[in-house]
Image 1 (cartoon, rainbow, N blue to C red):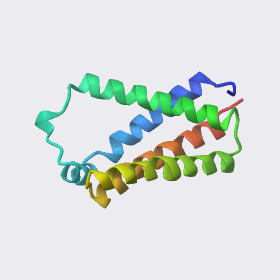
Image 2 (cartoon, rainbow, N blue to C red):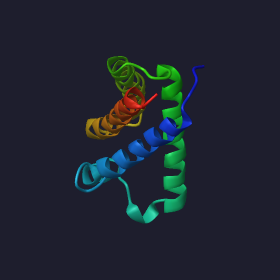
Image 3 (cartoon, rainbow, N blue to C red):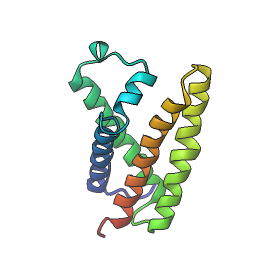
Length: 131
């Protein structure tokens, strides 16, 4: 396992958390996501629990990605890994699950697009982090 800069990991996790807030907002894909996911706001979990776990999971993803790309990766190398992880691992895994659970392609593209953006943000944070 490579040496990990935990401050960079925290910044990466926060960046994906901010992206999620924008991505799933009514201004972008929030309405379509709620419709496609059959999401009922009245049955949502407690915000502290939902956002707390969302940040924890983002932190773990950022930590794993930092371990994968290593310290101070070149930009194109980090982007290459982000594309592999975001599309090859996350989106394709969602694709399998969404087909078996009969979820829509729209939902697949919304959720997978967010995670691709998440890993691309991680790549940018790690590639541009001052050494």
